Image 1 (cartoon, rainbow, N blue to C red):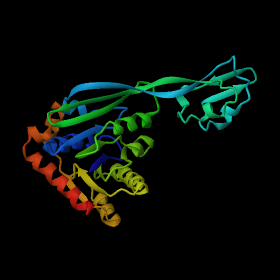
Image 2: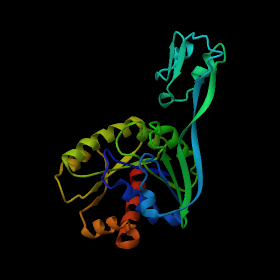
Image 3: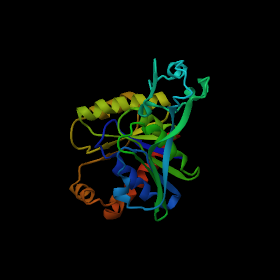
Length: 279
C-alpha cells in the first residue's frame, strides 16, 4: 500500500507526521520516500545511514552549427520554447527543456545532438529496518518532477510505502501523489489552512485517490475545517492538539514515537484509520 502525506501549504506538520508514521510502522516492511526534492527534511529526523547516491540527468538538445540548416522544425515542435532558431544562429535553453525528444526526431539533418543536464541526486539508505529514499534537486534546477519520478522508481514494490509529498498543488505534488492508494492531507484549523486544504482536496479528487484529513494544532483556530470535512464527506482521521512536549521534541529534531512513547500508539491508530477509510 502506498500512503502519501500532503498539505496545501508548508509548515502544517506534514514531514513530522510522515517520519513518525514510518518509524512507528518500521517492523512492517516500510519504506519512506521524501519526494519534497526541493527541500527534503525527513533525514533531519530519521538520521539515516545513506548507502547509495545516484546522479540523475535529463537529456537535453544541443544544435550542431555545422549541420543545422535553420529550418526551424525543432523550434516548431518544442512547446516550452527551449529552442530558438534565428536567421544565422540556433539557441537552446536547456533549463526550459522537458526532455520529450521531439526535436531529435524531426530534425532532417540530424543536427540536434544529445547532451545531459544534471537534475540532482537520489539517495538511498536505511534507519534500522526502515528503508529510506530521498531526492535532492540541484540548486538552480527548476524541473522537480523528473527527479521525483526517479525517487518513486527506486522504491520496492512490496510492503508499505509512505510518500512525503511537497507542499502545495503544483506539478511536483501531482508527480508525488500519482499511483498512491490513499492520501493524508495535513492542515490547521485556520482560514489559511482551510483555503489551502480546499485546493489540495481539489487536486486529489482530480487524481481519483481516496483521502482523509489530519488536523494539526486542532485546539487552535475555529471549526471551519471540520465543517468543510463534513460537507465534503472526507473523514478526519486524527486531531493533534497543541502540546508543548511535542514542540520541544520537534525543536530538538527527535522522533516523537521514540521520545514520547504514547505517540507510537497514536501513529498505529492513524494507520488503522487509513485502512478503515479505504474499505
